Image 1: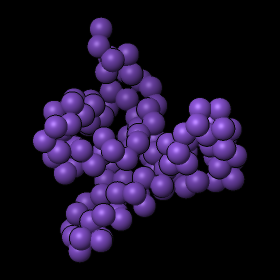
Image 2 (image 1 turned 60 degrees about the vertical axis):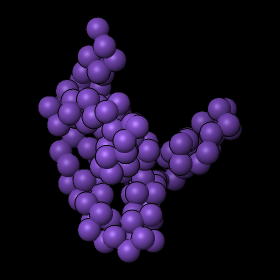
Image 3 (image 1 turned 45 degrees about the vertical axis):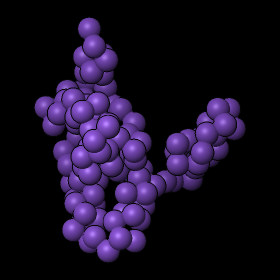
Amino acid sequence: MGILDQLKGSIVGLDTAPLIDFIERHETFRALVRPFFVALIERKFSIVTSTVTLVETLTHPLHLQKPDLARRYQEILLNVENLTTLAVSLAIAAKAAEIRAGFNLRIPDAI
């Protein structure tokens, strides 16, 4: 049984890097993350991420003046079924601080 089979029916946290690798077809990593996103589309599990991911995915395309790519990220993060983008609430911020303190993570990773 593979890891994607183990995720069936779960809610999975999504970090920014795999999304970028998949959408921008990163040569090294796209093949690794593609099965994950195919399983998402097939509704095998749901994904949750935060508005921090939105900030991280929009920044580089906007800096490079690629508004179409920025819109694509925004469309994905705000409108794909089985993918929920949550605002960072006070409760999430407090829990992220606990996680960050316990595991020495960067703020976006703790969120």
